[in-house]
Length: 320
Image (tube, rainbow, N blue to C red):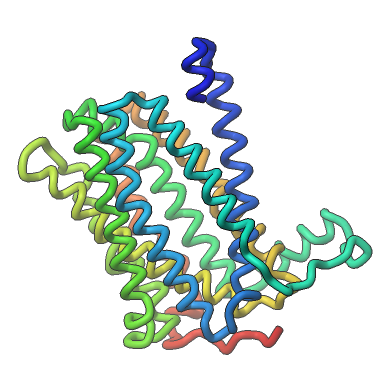
């Protein structure tokens, strides 16, 4: 993208292609790392491993938006995107240095893509907790995708903030993620690993209703505070439910289970963005933002209808 911009040939089709390619690669990466982690740590260390990964990820989210906002202001967006591209190359080089003795199934052991997709779907949809986790995450992602489609327009056109300030506001979510990653272990031990999954959602998501109240005065802090609190809950929820999925699933089904979950919970993202854009266009940005924010707390309903509501701790993991 920066090279095309410097050559004067950057176009919307290229942006769409880059977005599609990055999205496809991200799906492969997320499914792979979530399936790979249990081979690097013991099963009883999975929650701790995920929490530490979240600390690193959230730390990057704290620095990333703020740095991006100031880079856009100081050296323009193309240079900021170039820095982002370099960071991906560095990330790939670091990952290439990982060594593991885990065996990869041979081609002869694989039974065909369609059959393996079916196995993943049956495993997820046939489990009373996994399917409710999928429903909760998908509904939350749909609502948050609506929010994301409206966020920049809301902050720039309605509230009137600069890119630098907007980056700092977005960084508040990263700080919340850091706090959530630090709290997930103690919180899960205190309330129980099953309760932690739905309580983290129930207690934090209502704070997103503060977002539409943001104004360019002291109420600017409402945006940062809301996403800080919500991000604490998101990370506690994500670490808890991901660790449960990894511990529950036999090794040979990890990739299929994670791919199925990713398809379900990420498949709604473009639909949410489209819904947010359409509502913003026809109702206005602020009314659309209210609708998007009101949908976020409702995502806990599937969890409250699942067996998690009556459990303190999650079932014992299946032995590999």
